[in-house]
Length: 402
Image (cartoon, rainbow, N blue to C red; front, side):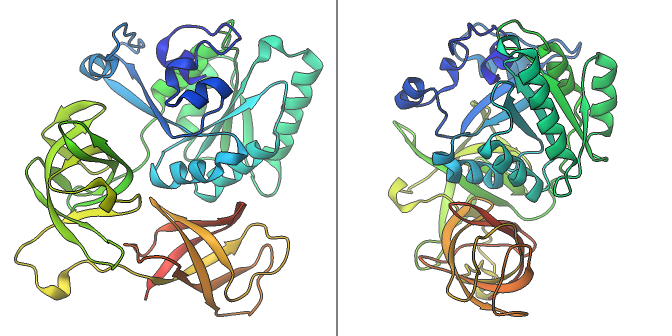
């Protein structure tokens, strides 16, 4: 789907369109995404999609575009669920595009990904693909099943099947504010329904409001070692503004300490830029930092050389959170361990105490105290978290740092 959307060429039904998006050899061989991929789609001021023939097409698109959409391509297979959860929490997407194969229907992992989007409050729209190779009665049963799931008590969405451009405008305008869930039926081989999806993406309004007036805060999602450049980190600027040459605090390390480093260069959409603002997904080249001292989940923060010791950032090993158990087959009590995802942070944590009741079951809400097993992390009060042990088990919000 993404290959056809962004490259403007139709698929051959044998996976031709997806080859350009894969990052690893094993992905091409198996046909499964296992890592977090990135693609962009640009529209000019007349709402035409910008086609690019060059290999380094990102620069061409960002030059000509009036609107640029960034896609974060996440894995669908159960084996790579931890990567998918990290992408959902760390990349801060504004919308989720849920892919459903017309011939397969809403299988187990599709439901899991839908639940993930709902628990993170990300608006979802559904694209049913492969309608060209699916018998009419199978497509009908897929649509019935999807409608039943979306209307169920746990989802409470109103599915709206988009057939015309008038539907596109109505759904895009009311998509965010209401409980609408637009559903598109497309074929990547014949091209049926693709124009409706493109038009919908073009007129979608941006959702999130980021604050550039606050102090700088950046979360690291990926680390790289680039020849002749050095250590490079990728992630999202949560708040503030940063320029090339500015000093920043990097941390926390395994002891919870922060070190000072300098930003040598900033790239956005693979193009060098002099400054990065809140809400942008960027890569920074860092000065005198070795890649093996970095890990995902660390942060870059504003550095003030005159700040007193009391004002320096603190990493937390323990925190309190209000949680809701989505599903657990038995009971949860003290010393229960699960993988916690909060923004770019991904680490095993142990429940130390539960306040209201000693034992938690599916559907329970409670205030609990978590403790990270390995090292402290930099957290913010009010951040949403997901914890899982295998499949997603619960969601919550950080209420207190201890």
